[in-house]
Length: 179
Image (cartoon, rainbow, N blue to C red; front, side, top):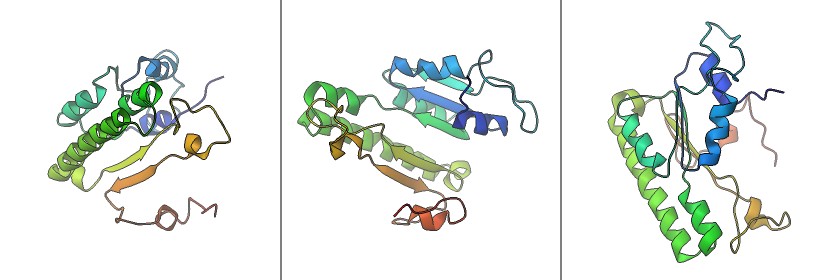
């Protein structure tokens, strides 16, 4: 059965969406939410079934996204970096290779933040959420008993988010602190 995503919510409310992924396995999103397989839009105006307006999988998706951002001001987008996961699996999480890929991502995020702050349309209306799908130790992440495998970052930056702010305090009517 169909499983709705955040792309459904954004697209069906008339927002321009994008997904740029470094791994080809992310093509499952395009297969799931395209003009044929996406759910009918039952929210407001009919924006069609294709929930992802701009979609690409490419090892350099991060660079492609930054280039596209200067031309297309996506209102909801998902950007996937493949490098840290690849280095973690091949060289180990915390290895010099992994550290270098994390620095690469950090540099790229810095460029993206600089661009967002320099664009008047984006500066006051953009929020970045950075997270990961898993952690790791050694070259794996399969042990459910190892906190390093499932403890992941969740960082939020942008319009309306003060440095060091508590996300539960910023969203008191929609989120409850689990303790």
